[in-house]
Length: 254
Image 1 (cartoon, rainbow, N blue to C red):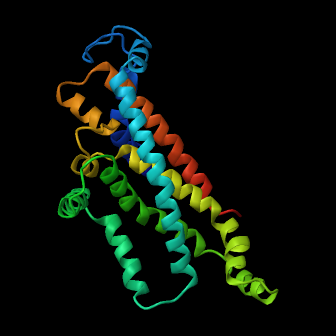
Image 2 (cartoon, one colour):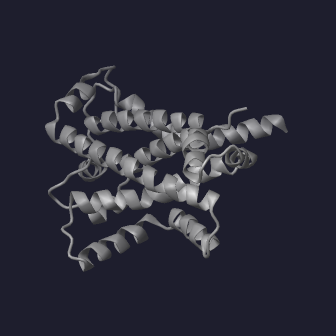
Image 3 (cartoon, rainbow, N blue to C red):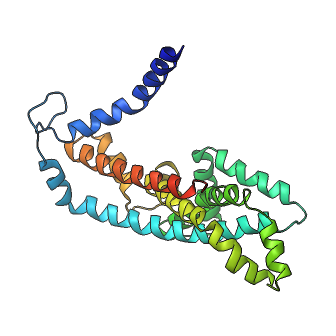
């Protein structure tokens, strides 16, 4: 039975990660075409660094991801505190809507955001892209922070009140330090989602502001170049590091 479980798990993880492993291996292939192995090389990474259009798109993606993750983390953390600390009419419905946004297909959110921007006559570009990334990141921050706060001992807040702390002081000196790892985890998760998003960004960005995922998509449509393999390897490594850091920070301390 144990051997069957190991075999099944190995099969699942092989199916998930084997294509990525192949991509990483071929990013070091000296051949310009991925059908044959011509030796080990770093020249595609050097070519990637010298590609000004890709580097510009990467800089734009970093700008959007950092800004969107920061603003979404602030808004989402405040919302999570409100859901955790206070009772108000419609609380359960609003919390349910947060989960609906997480489960909603990206194409639905992308089209709905595009319709809204067109309706209010906003120029499609950096601003609409940033607002869209903030919008789809907020629910993930709320869920991440709220899931950690649900494990807090509420007697700590009562004790702070008994010692004369105001509501603001309780949140500032008791709640925030306890939820800080989850806030950082929410930021890292938001950053990763923003950097990797293609579908929503496709609808809400204009031709004057190019970002890395869309740039890769346009390059792949014309054929997979070795620089694309190198770029995808770098993005996968960055995403893996960020997700691992997010999980470590969000892990409950014993």
